[in-house]
Image (tube, rainbow, N blue to C red; front, side):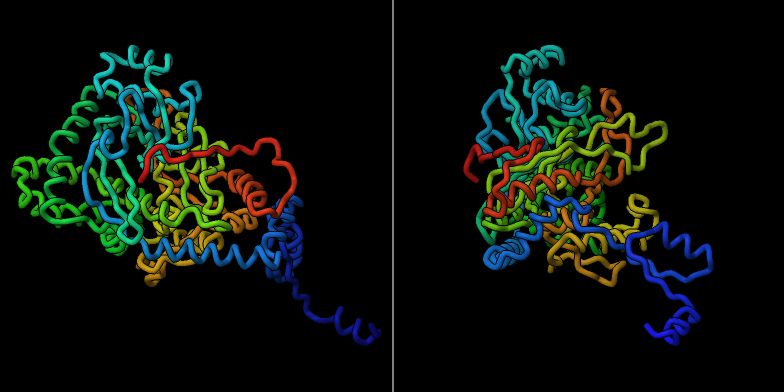
Length: 498
């Protein structure tokens, strides 16, 4: 450099751009220097193994195009899906669920590790079935193996929160009209002393009996008279009315009751039963949640199983463990510990120290472009992510970094009808360290009567995606290294044909 050029450079006004060095930028600002900061971080936090796997997957001239094509096919299947509620059947009939089997949300788990609310729900279901006269007797049936436990996903079913299903419980039957597969969910019990919240009181069992003996038959009459319920039609409209269709289903619940009440009457349900159902739904803004869950399960099952796909097709948790299913891993699910519920808004008198871990099969909703992926549609949920609609929009921008598409049907009015992010890409999560979040509730870990103690968001553990990357790389031949210590995968082969 010539002396003249050096003098010109040193005499000019200093303009600085920094990348990922916050302390350096702040030091310059204190000296009056204007700084433009670039929020840059090394991919995968600079971990050499993860960076190496990501590089091989992205640069291999044969593998990279196969992954891209597989992901495009996965997204196309999601977009083509048309899930409809077509019937109401008992779990015994719908799932082939035998006596003395109880299903639950999340990964498989032994009774000794199961969280408090899920254990209480299992005991309550045993009492509901009449297999035991009290909770102590119910507990003995589980500990001796007389009652067996199994995850809902193994049976093609889903349940919110504790997610417990027993043989005589009625299920919503969702059929994916585009692909012919079916999926199932329980009915939503509402708030208060409910099994899905981990409470088993006399009122809990009475409500379950009413759902089985009054509500389920009435809804079945409505389906026979009025035809199937096109779930995503309701979801698309609900997003325009303030729902994000996971933590908030006020609009979709109202739309369903408005359109479906005449069908129940036409189908032969009594006026008094329909009135009681309408009153129940009026007190239960989560009523449509289970319709959405069954529909999303049918959608994501149809999109799953395409070799080389890196798209996440299910997420589920049981209060202790979190598992994800990746399209290209077949029946293998990857498991890691759940994160604490430290981003929730707690009811007065409760805090994170009282909470069970993140729980429920409902996290599958976020894999389909709604729930957390649509949080900007629900201004009432803004406190979950910073308190403003602008913060919700910022959260959507972050989620767009880890998804590969936008959902063709689901739009967010506060963001000028922008489409919701769709298709969580395993590799993008590992690279950016941005994890999907789930809009959800919080349950009390130890108190048998309290139930829900808060609501907010739960973030998926990044470790589960790191582990899934290793499993995927081995699956497609991009890594010959032994699986590292701590990698946990499970196989959930379907126990019945869908």
